[in-house]
Length: 326
Image (cartoon, rainbow, N blue to C red; front, side):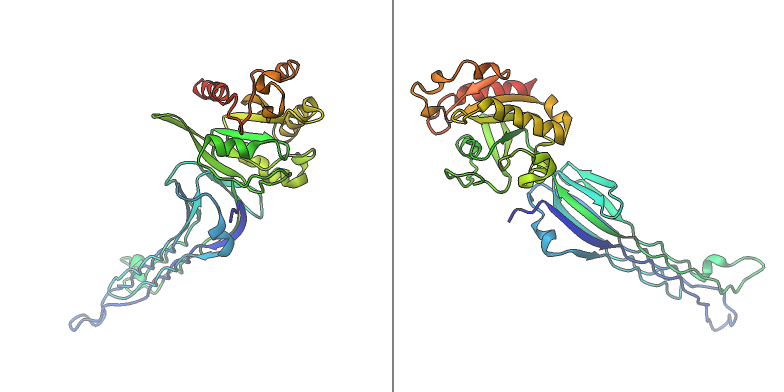
């Protein structure tokens, strides 16, 4: 199950209280203070893990609580610290405060660890309050409460190349041919309902990650067809492929619709390196050579392909790797 958005509640541990205690030795009936400090409360942290690609574990568990610090003890014994709680998330995860909307952190490196709720401070035992004028203090301090937060956790996949196009534009077929990904492929719209990642091998020493997002329709930037949920997965892509079916009754309008949706979602996406890919050219009498020359002028560069017929794929790979290496 692919889950890319959840809200969870986290609570760090409270700090342990300080202790009031005095030495009781045979020859020191009025021994000095020896009350120890409490332990600190445990933190709640998130860590990026390369082996994860969905938030499904957080979907099933929505509450996380770290351990409380132990209270201080006599004989100057410090209480044990509360245990930390570490939540593993995929690389590319964005953590926000669900109540304020503030971004707390973005995890983009494997093993990156960030504390999202800090444990309470430990309380001081009475031995900390001994002075020349007060040799038997009874003062101590309580441990403080740990932070509590509602977190909005959103996954933005990290990929080098993103495929964007209308439903049934041939995106899934292309990624299945170029990579080891196996998305569902059928001759009807919205076959792909969740993003699909695939590793495309360029040669023995080079490869890149491609992501296929579900088809976009007009109004996607407003959330139509879950467009907002899908578009965030191409925000970090370095190269975008605009996928247009040559059998589209008006391919030029389809191309401009895609560009418009990206602009309205995030204008910076139009500044990304990109390739216009004219798909399903095997249906044309002359294959990729039969593409309308006017369509080839819509975008620079433009490549005509047939993923099923393995036509034009070498040209596409050359353009993509050239853009990635710039």
